[in-house]
Length: 183
Image (cartoon, rainbow, N blue to C red; front, side, top):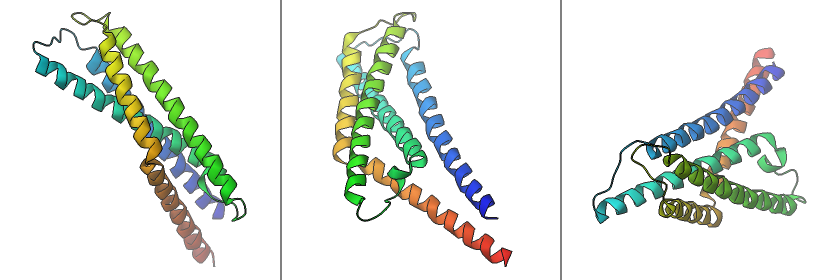
């Protein structure tokens, strides 16, 4: 019964990782699709502002989704990131977590920039669209601003910790429930 509850907890963790990456890839596909719609032309400066704001929103959300997926994957698979082992190692674990989150912000930023360049490159093969450096710069600005916000205010990481703690509480409840039924 204990094995069953541990397996259930593990499968739930894998389902969360699959859901995190699945929503990220679906959103990335949506960004790519909207960027390669044919024959979209702007006629005024107001349209350019709306288009830039929409692009910034898309790439900010994409950054958050990729970052969330990385955090969910690492916190579910690396035990040192999900729990403190002892009070004496708390400072070392906090430093380790900070280093990992810094590397994740950098990695997510680079992936976002590469994706923005790829999408803009793909636009040159779409009828009625042109690849514009200005669009890439707007996307990069959105990614960098979001990275700055995520790095200085780790609300996304705290949310992941709260979800991980909820999953652990549920696993403990299931273990207790199976232990009672076993007696």
